[in-house]
Length: 210
Image (cartoon, rainbow, N blue to C red; front, side, top):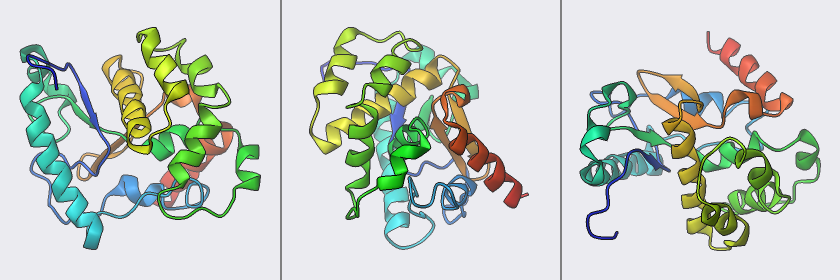
């Protein structure tokens, strides 16, 4: 990072628990998106055991390190605390892109190996101009960001750009958060931007967990 860099908000692509949460808690947000219609479109890994638990611990460490670059004003916004010393939010890039795509896009999904689904979603959402045309009207970000979204081909940098969009929605207060205080939240695009299949799916899965 450049010397002297400070952030107002940070979005991390990893399972992020609230402060004081049980490290082994089963997260509501993960189980909601493990059900239909999300299960074959943007299913998350479960993070309370095995590799997922290792990722949960790594995310906590990353959160602690990144919190050191938060500006003083950011540290003071206690309401936004999600697990660290400032407004650090959990991004879920696969779901962020999936909920923006019409249901027809998923009717011809190819067989994808582990790790390939995100790039498939990215190319459908960004390559078709859906992200840049829709989200640029809602987020006050430099033109360079939208240009990089369209041109980027590297998997990890693409994911970082979606994290940036997540942070921007969290910062302006319009992000849709899904989850609960015990296990944390996914921060996603504003609900009015979601396609109907995703809105209806969220209502259905939330009813199943009541």
